[in-house]
Amino acid sequence: MFELVKLPFEYDALEPVISSETMHEHHDKHHQTYVNNLNNLLEGTELESLDCPKKVLESLDKLPEDKKQAVINNAGGVYNHNLLWEFFTPGGAKEPVGEVAEKINEKWGSFDEFKKEFVAAEKGRFGSGWAWLVVDNGELKITTTKNQDSPVLEGQTPIYGNDLWEHAFYIDYKSDKGSYYEKVWDVLNWDKIEEKYQESK
Ligand code: MN
Image (cartoon, rainbow, N blue to C red; front, side, top):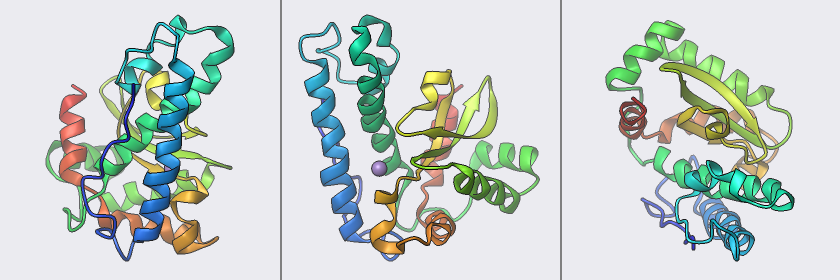
């Protein structure tokens, strides 16, 4: 059985970048729905005792064929959002720290160049999905996925990701998603991203 994770900060902690209203909708409604759907889908299957969404995504071959896509959508929805809340923090480091900072500079030349490429990837994803910074065979890469697909389905380890679904920004930014992609850098938890990078090794 899966349960909705608690936010690691108050609902209004990320204002004005992300409003309390958005956080309530996003966490209490959207994220909760993925949790409920996943519990319903796994009931009576071999995976029903699991409580780690990543394990579910790594065990899709144990599921009946007609459930696989719905489980990809909903286990992905649970896992991606569990990660998303960890990537945010009020008053975090404003730029990368530690070894991930070195690797970003090595690969993209500077944090500014990295941000430009990341935002271009966010804008380039048509429809709903996610933009990611992943570790792929030891190397940092920017990638995007559609819907709730997780990079773990491609054998990659996500160390940062941003939700590109309209529900992530529409209350606060309406159709101006470009502004959301620029402002979200202000609430990133680079200590956590560095921790995820170290864990990926
Ligand atoms: Mn979302």
